[in-house]
Length: 188
Image (cartoon, one colour):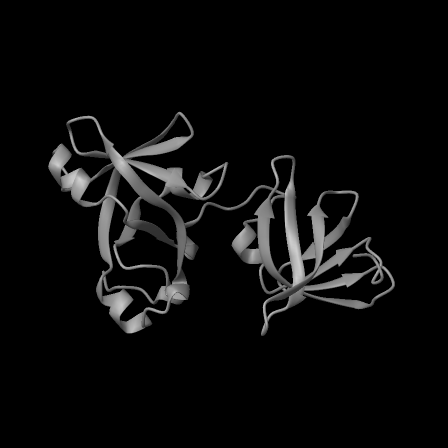
């Protein structure tokens, strides 16, 4: 299989440590519910710093290595993975710090009324009065629920932090990249 474009890969976590003596790795997932990470049959690892750290994409792309996932399970808030070809603790420790990336098209289908946060980024946010609020530039979690940051995508300046809850989010139209919110344009 050829190396996919970085635009097709989504970072889902990072290897934090070796687990045991048989080459398993402990992955710190970026999500509290790492469904895509747990169901992946293959992952790409990169030891180069994040794209937003100023590393040229061509250099980063060259550093990607694909591994088949033999097993993945949750353990104490981490994902413990067995990767094909990683057979002892020393090999696993050599991967410490590697970012775990998965092709977006390999994610399992989201349940109804559930969304992958990566799909929300870039959506236009409008309110019930059909006023444009901005674009979703980030999605985070505050412990109780998700929060979408709405603002200007070019400057990355946040104008609104909106709770991603049923009472506020009226409709998500992913094919048209539009989220309708019960949110007033003068609310900060």
